[in-house]
Structure formats: C-alpha cells, structure tokens
Length: 314
Image (cartoon, rainbow, N blue to C red):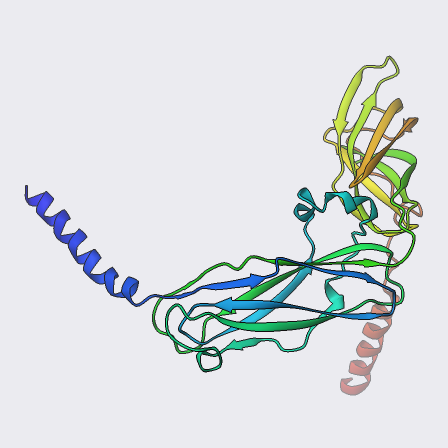
C-alpha cells in the first residue's frame, strides 16, 4: 500500500511539473503552395524566375530560411514518371538563388491573432549555366522555420512539405551506356572485380553493377557480388567495383556483369584470368620497394661537430 502511495505521488508531481511547459508551448503552423513549380523550358545560359507562397496561422513572428538540395527520385513515382527518359541526374541545386531570404513573417505585416492567415511570396531565380546538360532537372526546396532567439518556452515546429522545382534544359537527351570490359585480381584476402562502364549518353546518371556472377570452368556459380552506385557524367568511364570476400585461386573464370541505371541496363559476359596467390598482397606498381639510402648527411654533420669540439677544447 505504501509503495502504491509513493508511486501515485511521483506521478502527480511529474504531471504538475510538465503541464506548465505543455500549456506554454508555441507551435508554428506553416504551409506552402504550390507543391510543384514547373518552370518549363530554359536554354543554357538563360535565367528564369519562380516563386511560391508561405502561409501561417501562427500568432508569433518568426524566421524562415530556405534549403535547396538535389531532387529525390521519389518525385517520379507519381504523375511525373513519364519524363524519366529525358531526366538528367546532374545536380542543379547550385543554380537556384533566392532574392529575399531568410524570410521574416511578422504579425504586423499580415494581421495577428489565432486563425488569421498570413502569406509571404518567396521569389527565386534559376541561372542555367552555358554548359548545362540537356533534359529535365529537379531541385528540392525546403523551407526551414527558425526559433526566434530569446524564447524560453517549449516550441513545436510543424514540418513543412518540400517544394519541387522542375525545368527542362533545351537540347537532345540520350540516356545510354555500355560495359567495356571486366577485370579481376587478388588484393590481400579478397578478389577485386572491376566493371568498366562507359556513359555514352548526353546526361549524367548513377550506375551500379547490381549483379556480378563468377563461374568456374565447368559452369558452376562460385560467387554473386555487386557494386555500389557511382555517379557518371556524359562520356565518362567509371569503375564499378565489387569484392569477393575470400580470394579466388589463380586460374580462368567466366564472369557476367549486369549494370543498371535509372532507365535501363546493359550486360557483358567474358573470360578472366586471376593471377597471384590467395591471401598475398597485390604487387606494388613499379617493382619491389627500394631500401632507403643511408643518410650520409647525418654522418658529415657529426664529424664536423666532433672536429669543432676537438679544435675548441683540446
């Protein structure tokens, strides 16, 4: 019984201490419109202006900063999926500049009191560089409310839906790639497999060797590995690297690699030869390490110092 009374007392005290903070908590009610800003077609070297509106019913003044990031592929899961064939994965977030940020939403400029809707138009410009890739580009704009300095009460910031700015850079769009060759070698206790992928298109994209299969000479599957995603620009050749956890014995193997990118995939099959002893480190380019030369200058300095001491004190 005494234990139950003590527990009840602790709970009551906790509620009494927490309630004032809950009662005094301030909350930002913030919204944005529209959710998608389609700026249409922009030529390389041109500038275009866009805008959106931030609204709030909060009776407090506060600041709103803006973060701009690379667009997310989740955006294309809905109605805009059809443009993927003309999409450039080039990062265009650095092309967006805002004219009036951070934004100060003041109760005096838009009315005050709970339930009053205040709105502020946010303007930005997109500067497309001369060497911009053709195709659709997507940036993600995230308004970020900031707590005014000096507030001592609890604050609840309601998350704002991110805005997506979409635009098309003029030019011929091509998304394509090819696997040039596959190499393998033992590196320490592992076997490294490099798939050389060539971006033969006109736009940047991420590519990954999602499936690399290694077979022995009798056709038995020995290993199935993969690489991480790698960013590649038009005309660039990149290595998509995977590792076999235990080094393979020297000899001949059949390897197939399937490289995937956002709108397609390409495969290659070839024979490879692995040299070296499993578990032995790969040779250092340029031959075996050379022994360090004896530091004769140290001996010369020692002789000079010894001679000076003899001359000075003998």
